[in-house]
Amino acid sequence: MSSFQDLRIVDNFYQTSLFFPMPTVIISTLCEDGMTNLGPYSLVQPYYVAGKDYYAMLLCCRNSSNTAQNILRNGKCAINFIDDKPKTFKEAVKLSWPGDTPAEKMAKCKYKLEKSLIEKETGEVRPLILTDAPQVIECTWIRELDGADGDRAGQLDGYEGPYRDFNGITSKFGAHFILRVDKILMKKKYRDAIINGVKARDFPPLPIDYGYRDSKNFWYHRRSGMRAELLQVREASLDSVQYAADRADDKIKFTDEALMTILGVPRVFLSLVLKGCVEWARENNVDLITEEHMKIINDKRSKEKQK
Image (cartoon, rainbow, N blue to C red; front, top):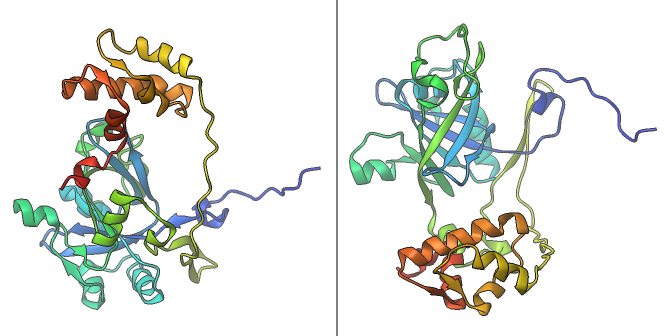
């Protein structure tokens, strides 16, 4: 006999049929008149994280929302993460009522806003961002994916098909937007932590929410103590890693000490790691990769540390 019971799956299953933990963000977009609109969202996540010449986030939302209509119109948005203070979350909930015009919402909004860093640097008009956000992702919708460049703003009562598979208008009332990450902005204390090494005290106090339930409340919890769980490393033998390294390139070689630093790399990723090391060596005119070189290669934040 199973220890579980079946629960019927209904619309908005992530909050009606599950306890599904999600981030809470405020997405800022540009209206036709240049006003910044703010909308709270949880269905947002990393999409392209590696292997392309850009990175991307994915946003799922109602296609008639102010946010969706603005993205369809000009493609610009910013994903603003908020802290977990009750007054901050209460303000996010106030912004969530469907049907309010941007002017109606923004007239009562208490969030402090400032210019986008991209706008400050380039002059390109972008949505304002939240001054008190621990971190912000400035984005541009990649409208050419999935043929979504034909999708247009203006249909507030639902879109007729055919629909896109994964980008643009994906159903009568739904939309998905693949958003290229243009810039990640972060408050200094959190940026320093990522560059210099994160400890439990360094994580920003971000809320985790479970959505709208009981036709009454949005539920969320605040950050409690962070816990680190050590990854159990399975080390390969030096001989097996050396065998793979010898076949990575016929000219660029590794010292034993260099290879010792990657014995814990899972076998399925070893070829990719070695290829990355070889590419770095070519770019830096290195024929023999040493342990010191590996430290530089492995430190993705080495450039920031040199500043």
